[in-house]
Image 1 (spheres, one colour):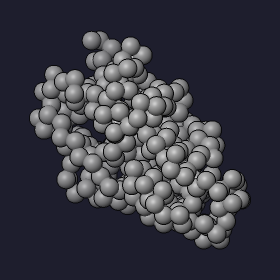
Image 2 (cartoon, helix red, strand yellow):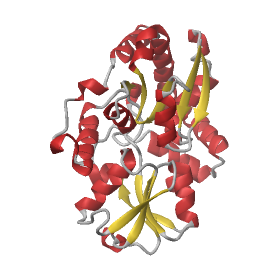
Image 3 (cartoon, one colour):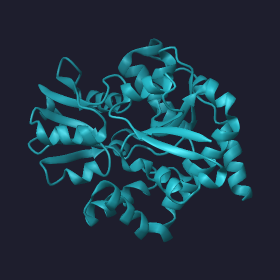
Image 4 (cartoon, helix red, strand yellow):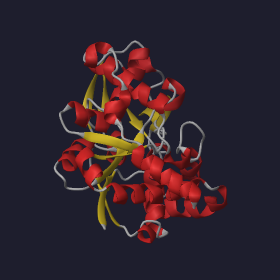
Amino acid sequence: MLLRVNIFNTSSNLPLLVAQANGYFARRGLTVEIQTTPNSDEQRAGLAAGKFEIAHAAVDNAVALVEAGQDAVIVCGGDAGMNDFMVRAQVNSMADLRGKLLAVDAPNTAYALVAKKILKQAGLLENRDYSVKLAGGTGPRAAAMVADPQLAAGMVNPPFSLSVLDKGLKSLGSQHDLLGPYQATGAFVMRAWGNDNADALTHYLGAYIEGQRHVMDPTHRNGMIALLASRFKLSLDVAQGTYEALVKPGSGLAPDARFNPEGFAAVLAIRAEMQGMWGGTPPAPGKYLDLSYFERAIGAAYEA
């Protein structure tokens, strides 16, 4: 069966690439076509329109889909984001960002809300103390920050958070250190498609889990660094740093791609606070989730 999978071109998708390269999907009777998206708006619209079956991105995008009336569901976790709050070299504190521009993908989802929360903690509010500018997904956003001196800050994850360090950008701290647990990348689908293709989705998640385990297995470290260097055209130092970020407990890849309930509670709380949604009180998470496919997949993985 052919499955079209849409992703951002970033290192958090290394388990997916490994699963495809090592035949983990093929062994389960699946052919996976990997697509990349330039931004989250196009990804959300594409999933809702049936242009692909599975999306991997910050799961706050699935929340946004549901709140826009589209019946999407999160089916597994992935990682905690690995983002750094990146700024231009002349910025030495959050206070220095007054009157400056924050680079974001979409202004009202995921890492844009995370950045706004970090700035709010520092006493800075959007439209009063700073403005936002659309700059695309992580790779294009990092490149835009390097090229445009007006873009003073933005959330960036590996390998781009490392590759821009010698191009005039620096970090004011990691998202994990600044905000704590966060459920970042995960897989989500349209609920009706999942119901109609339960076996295929379960097999897909089983292969993805196997890919996640492969990446995190320390015996594969050198091979993973080589793959990162080749895939993203990285120097050895940046590839090594990216791999270390991927396997760092708490802020990197989640073992077995498990979903993090505490991290998802933070996703909903940040959306409630920064968007003023739900009267400021985050809802119960159940309507955004269907982890039954994952539980069947992980059960089969342990049996194997």
